[in-house]
Image (cartoon, rainbow over all chains, first blue to last red; front, side, top):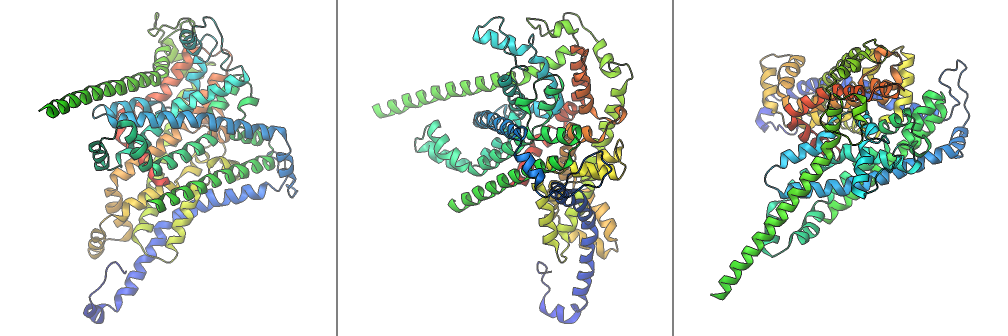
Length: 314
Length: 293
């Protein structure tokens, strides 16, 4: 109502009916919003509350007995099990191991692409193309490339000059972790490159030109101008990569289905899936879900804080 | 005089350095782009090879002996029941339905939030935005229990219902519709157009770009969805492509060439979309990140 001020005299003459007319029309707002309220209540708010609730019960998937309230017993069991802490380890190792190359490479590619005048789009499309594939397809391709006779061994043997060595990409406990990271970095590096390219494009050209005239070299410009001005994008992309890494599932699932050892790559999502579906232990699965939720909430909160403090600086 | 010569020389040195740098940048980009493309070439190339060639050391990039049969085997499956065709259809039905409902519901909610001033509007908006913080992985177990309770296991409904719309879609449509000219809506009202008709024939018709970005984003997310179909679709004929891929790959006697044919078939639709609508893909990712800012 306030954005459409009616001249005084009009209000006196004809404005009487206007507020009620507007109010009546604004009720239509509820009509259009209603499907959303219904949907998010049932499929977002109810399930998250339900996950918290279930985590206090000994609920089994295929049991007809009413679940019993057991307080914090599920939490005690989960927090006391080596299997859970192994999952935390696997998730963290994966997140850090995928984060660093993803961040460094996508930033490097973005800076290089942004410095070109031509072929920007072609390079972006080439680097982005794996992101188009389903994760299952990506995992399947690499499954064959990581075969003892596959391309991965052939390429590394050629480069490192170690003919005939099998690096056990899918069998060795350490290598299988590296392998899942490679798949992930390969699939998403183009996606994050584009986010960086978009961020760099937002930096006013005039700042760069001024620095150029003042005699700043490309390295100086990178560290003194691009990086500081890119901070909002950097924060955003880091948190997005981390959250994305915490949710990894498909590669680990497919690799273990093909006989890769579960332990080293039993990330939290895979553990939740197996605990719920294979073991039918809904209570324990809910505990892990709740803990994962809290971890991601903390990350998002951190992002908000860091990006807010960035705004204060500027 | 000499100072002019000096600046010219410096300028030339600068130009040479610039050319070198630019050549280096191009070289790095080309090399990495090729590395990124290698697995894709491997997939398409191997999909035409007999298994012995796929696993040959050294690998030859061009098939020595073209084996078109791989595609037949990929579709027919190892037990010859042609279930992949049904699974592809399922993926299409589920992804297209979700893309459509996401656009329609998000547009409706976004319109309600953008163009009407009712009590509690901000609370509704904030509540919907808060759901972006809930990762799917943490609610999948309760969602699965809901679907079981509703008897929707192994149905399209079960596959579709948790993804009918999403908070990001609502955000995107609201931002887009806030800038929509209110005069146009008022003019339609004066002409006696009903509120529902204003939405369907004016608002929806004019949300093309935002709707396209959102539709493609939702389509891709669902095309890629593995976790939820693994939970909900236990019967073979209700599985989607990613679930079929996992099952096909896990079979001990699976032929490597046929595996790559399975992967290639799954990728062709999204690659066609990607090359024809690349601007929505590249732009869409940027929009998506903006939504999280």
